[in-house]
Image (tube, rainbow, N blue to C red; front, side, top):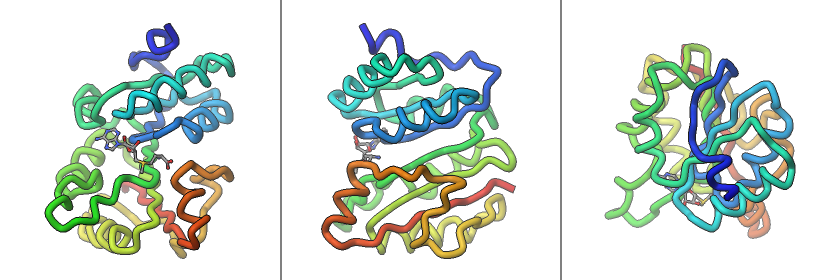
Length: 188
Ligand SMILES: C[S@@+](CC[C@H](N)C(=O)[O-])C[C@H]1O[C@@H](n2cnc3c(N)ncnc32)[C@H](O)[C@@H]1O
C-alpha cells in the first residue's frame, strides 16, 4: 500500500534530487523532510530497503518523495535530458574484485548517463569509504570537460551538499576506522 503511494511518477514543477542506491532510506527520508520544496526521487534494488523507506515516508507524512524499486539504470532512461538538479550516490557497492569492477555504478558509461540527465550547474554528490574507488572516480571526472570539481578536501564533508547525518554504510565505515571521501562535481 505504501509502495503504491510512493511509486514512481515524475510530473513536477519542483527541482528534482535523485538518490541512487538509497539502502534503508534514512538519508532519502531526511532529505525529503528538510527540502519540502524539492521532489526527492530514489532508486533501490533491495526490496526490504524500499519497503522500510516507503513506510518511513508514510509515517512522516512526506509527500515530496518518489521511490523506484529496481535498477537505477532503468529509471534513468525515463528521465528527460537535464531533468535532475542534484544526484546522490552514497557508499555505492565497491565491487572490489578485479573481475567485478565493471559492475561499478560510477563507471564511465554510467557517468555519461548521469551527465545527460543532470541540469547545467547541477551537482553529483558521492561518498565512498573505498580509497581505490575514490581515486578511480576522481580520475574519471577529471577527464570530463563537463564537470568541475567542487570539493577541496575530500575527507571533509561539505554540509552545503551532504546532510549532517550518517547513512548506515557511512556509520559502518567510520566504526571500523575508515575515513570516507565526500566528492561533489558540478556540471558546468
Ligand atoms: C553499500 S549499499 C549503500 C546504501 C546506502 N546508500 C548507505 O549509504 O547506507 C549500496 C546500495 O546500492 C544499491 N544498488 C546497487 N546497485 C544499484 C542499482 N543499479 N540501482 C539501484 N540501487 C543499486 C544496493 O542494493 C545497496 O542497497
